[in-house]
Amino acid sequence: MRYSERFMEHIEYAFNAFCKIVLRHESINAWRDLKRKEEREISLDYLMSEKHFEPSAMDSYFEKQDKPADTKNDGLTGKGYSVLL
Image 1 (cartoon, rainbow, N blue to C red):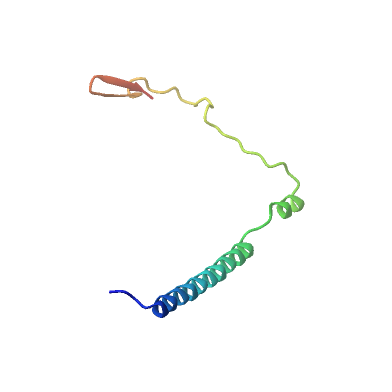
Image 2: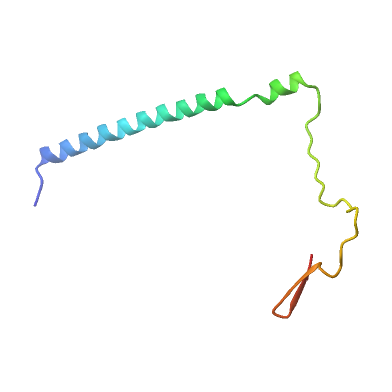
């Protein structure tokens, strides 16, 4: 069944209107999300001006343990392989 030229043009205009509405609502949602984010987040510049400290991070992956590790239960074995932890 072939559609008339007028009907095809109507479908194009309807689809165009639908896309404009979707884009408009998405822009409203994005704006709302940005406003919500702005209300809940604190600027790092503001925090740095309030408290004078250097931002840093400290990892403790390689610190010595107080107790020596038990060597009997340090590994996993299975299928003929042993893995030391």
